[in-house]
Image (spheres, rainbow, N blue to C red):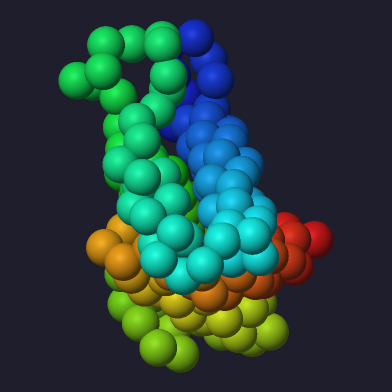
Length: 161
């Protein structure tokens, strides 16, 4: 029997909803960087592009809705979405009966296990891209991040078919 909240909503469905919503925001975040860097790289020289990337990294969001001191810088926003995805993903795995030992290399069995392992490796790649992008905005990293995001989405679809 699934654990439920006080209103009767199964916790599993709530976690899946949060996971999907965070994936939508993460994809938008990565798409923003991919589009912006493509335009900046095409239209500006390298020193101007570096300055635009740095200014964008320092921007805060959401604009105008909350006091400036409480707004998140763009890279922090990406990390927030990423951590929500990781935490909700782990909760989903555990709710499906997986154990901590299975999260290691080769811990998942069968074709679904290979798909899950590929997804986890791709998520680690996303974390590495996000780490580099947070400290050194670069015109190539968002494209790699977008490719990995699409791969994670595709692998996720395979896992729920």
